[in-house]
Every structure is written in C-alpha cells, then in structure tokens.
Picture 1 (cartoon, rainbow, N blue to C red):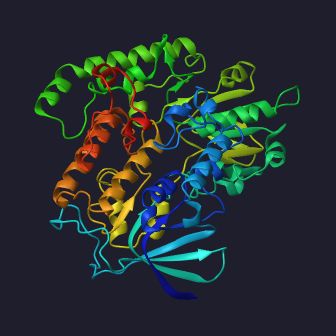
Picture 2 (cartoon, one colour; picture 1 turned 60 degrees about the vertical axis):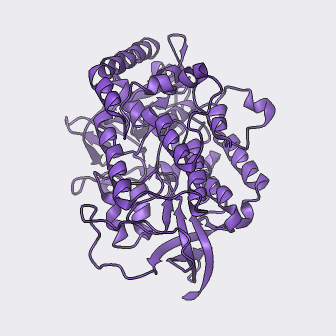
Picture 3 (cartoon, rainbow, N blue to C red; picture 1 turned 180 degrees about the vertical axis):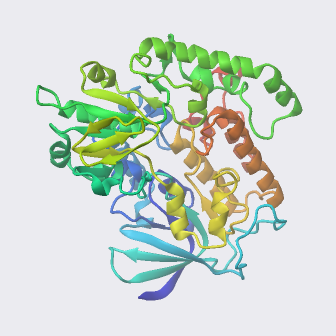
Amino acid sequence: MARTPIFSKIGIIGAGVSGIAAAKQLRHHDPIVFEGSETIGGVWSHCSYRSTKLQSARLDYEFTDFPWPGAEREESSFPSHLEVLDYLNSYARHFDILKCVRFNSKVVGLRYLAGKTSEEPADLRATPPEEYGSLLSGHPVWEVAVRTNNSDDIQLYNFEFVVVCIGRYGDVARMPEFPEKKGPEIFGGKVLHTIDYCKLDKDATSDLIKDKKVSVIGFKKSAIDLALECALQNQGPEGKPCTMVVRTLHWTVPHYWIWGLPFFLFYSTRSAQFLHERPNQSILRVLLCSLFSPLMRQAVSKFIESYLLKKLPLEKYGLKPEHPFVEDYASCQMALMPEKFFPEADKGKIVFKKASNWWFWEKGIEFEDKSKIEADVVVLATGYDGKKKLKAIIPEPFRSLLDYPSGLIPLYRGTIHPLIPNMGFVGYVESISNLHSSELRSIWLSRLVDKKFKLPAVSTMLERTLKEVEVMKRTTRFYKRNCISTYSINHSDEICEEMGWNAWRKKTWLSEAFSPYRSQDYFN
C-alpha cells in the first residue's frame, strides 16, 4: 500500500561514502538520504572481511575539511575497514549529516513526473535537447518509492532533484553462467558469493572454511584477501589448501615503492600524467602523445613490471599477466598484495589453477581441459553488478540510456547524464582515491544546484563524455570501469575551472610538477 507523497527539494539514494559526501555539500537544502541498511558506510559496512584494509594510505583517503585525527594522520599505514567506518561516522556526526538519513529505507523504484516521456527509449544519436535545464525547477520531477523496515507499506516522496549514490559494488552479485546441468545445483558442497561471506561473523566463517577444501573463484582484491583468510584458518596438518581459480590475471603490488622510488612519481603527478592521453587536449598535446608518449609510457610500465617480477614470485606460480602494467592502473584494477599471501603459497596453503572456463561436478569443479578438483566450499569472488542495481530503480526510457556507449554510463563530469533530467550520479567514477573523486564531484554538484555556474549545451556535454570513453578504450582493454586514474588531475582541473576555481592548487611550480595531488589541495 502506497501512502500520500511527501515533498522535498532533494533526495539522495545511498549513505555510503558518495552519499554522505553529497549530503554534506547539499545539507543547506535539507536533503533526505535513503539508506537501505541500518548504518552508513556502504561497502565498508556490509561488503568487507575482517582482514579488509584500505588500498591507499590515510592521507590519500580523507575529506578536504575533515583530516584523520592528528596522530593517526601521520601514519602511512593502511587503515582497516573498521577504522575507515569510524572515520566516516565521525565525519557524519561532525557535520550533522545523520539527521538527514532515513535508515532501513530501501528505494524500490522511481517515476518521472515532469512532462511527458516518449514510450520509446531515447537515443543518444538522435538530436538532443539544447539545454539541460535547472536542477531545482520549483516543482516535483521524480517520485521515489521507499520501503521501510521490510514492511509491505510503500512511502512515496516527490523531489525536484535526485542524487543516486548506490555505487557499483555490493548488494547485487555478478554470477557466472553455466552449461545446463553443470551449475551449483549438482554440487554436493556449499556455494556462496563474497557478498554472503561478508555477512558471516567470525565463528561462522571459521566453521565454513577451517579444515575444508575451499575454492575461490577470481584473482582480484576480494579473492586474494579471502584466499589468505582461508590459508590462515587452515594451518597445521589437518588444514587443507585453498585453490584460487584464475581466469584473468591482473598485476599486484607489494607496496607503493618501485626500485626505491615512491609510486606516485609514475602516475599521480602533473609531469607523469602529461605522458598520458586525456580528453579535450590541444593539438600540440595530441601530437606529443602520438609521437613520444607511447615509448615513455611503455618504458615506465616495463620499469614497474621489472620490479614486481623481481619482488613477487609471479612467474614461479604462472601469475604474470600478458598485458602491460599500465592497463591495470588505467582501469583501477591494480591490487595491493597482502604481505603474507605468497609465504602461504610457498607453504602450499594457497594453490592456483588457471582456467578460462569451468563448471561444477558433484564433488567440486571441472575445467575445460577435463581436469577436476574436489571442494567442500566454493566462494565466488566474481564481483558486483552495479548496472543491475541502477536498472532496478531507474524507469524507462532513461534505463536504456545507462548502456550507451559500450556499456559505460556517459556522465558529464562523472555526475550528470545529459539526457536524464534532474538527476545526478555520485560514485560512478573511479580513481586512485574514490573518496576524493566523490567529494570533488559533490562540491561541483552543490554549486551547480545553487546556480553558481551553468552547464554547457547538452550536445557539448555528450561530445565530451564520448571523448572520455574513447580515451579509456585506447588506454586499456578493461575500459568499462569508468576509471580516470591516468588523467585524474586534468579531470579535476576541468571541474575546478568550471566552478570558477584556480585549477593549479600548489604553492610552487616544482610541487605542481612533481608532487601528488590529494584532497587537501582542493580545500577552498
């Protein structure tokens, strides 16, 4: 049963990192934030293992106006997920964001109210409208249906503007497809996704994997962390090895130093990013990138690879990727390898099986080469389907626009879809620090809502977003992740310039050229 709609100016869906960043910047409009769980934090709250740590140092993961506590901020260590949650909750309390949040309130659908929409899906190739229009139009544009505490009642809310911050991770598992009669239903053991594993407490995870034959499907960060947890639970003569089934190899790093040099020098300074193609660059830069940069990019990538092959036993275990390192960095898929991972592999507690295709049999997993392994537990570390989450609530004809082009959502400044009115998206652009990316785009969005600058024509926005997609496609084969890591400074420059800020934020030319950009540089 649906109740009479409640009207407010701005609604925000999700109270993860992106949601609380957007809420803080828009708090002068008294937004209503809908969070499906009972806590803020998003994936840090409900998609983390006990061993999960931040992939970057504290200084690279903090809000512009809320540094980590003094003593902790001096540490270069990587905070645990519990420390990150404490930091996010402290931020929310400090800026009184929690008063805006409706917990246990799951958004189950949206309906477009303003004007009439075509029954046919819009086409980006058709002539777009000339102007995007005001974000706060003075009348309801979106109706949001919310289910609270899993009740049968649906409360309707009407908003002038909606910000979607449900993210790409968590909630909806990406599940492999199997041939007929070769799926989990024929397997005699237990099958679960990492999202289910994260919900288990310490005793339950121990009961699940201790002294069991466990297979982990995947070789990204969640799979690596899980395999190590499994190995550490299975010490001693009764402990069984954990098998990692690897389909696509990706580069991992043991720490952020390469041959004695800090990692940021290679990709996170203006001078380093000058070597990489970026959208909307000048003819001179296009010429330089075409003539000289490919050789320099290849040299940097080879230099890093040489260190990783020296430091980590990748060739010993057949884990050396065939693609260059820069492609993983450019797609935000580089993972930090836990210190104890390869020592456990050396002890035989972690073993590897490379396979493009696999399926279940009664006692475990079978591979395309007809080999088999027995298993008691199979954990699918196969990622999340963020697009499916969006499509579950975004109505047509707008839902069809989420797939164009090439599976990427064309978002201007990573925030506004030029053909979806009165709606913003925060948290759908990845970089070396997703917190920083979300905060800066939330600042930009707030100033846009307050009419402190104006968007360009819709056709111009579409053209620029499509250019970004083309750059990603030319940079890495894994381009479908909306990652801007190789041109993140330029991306931030354009956002600053549009807001009327000075794009160059450092005090000296030397620091502009050779020091990394962090959140504190964008405090205004």
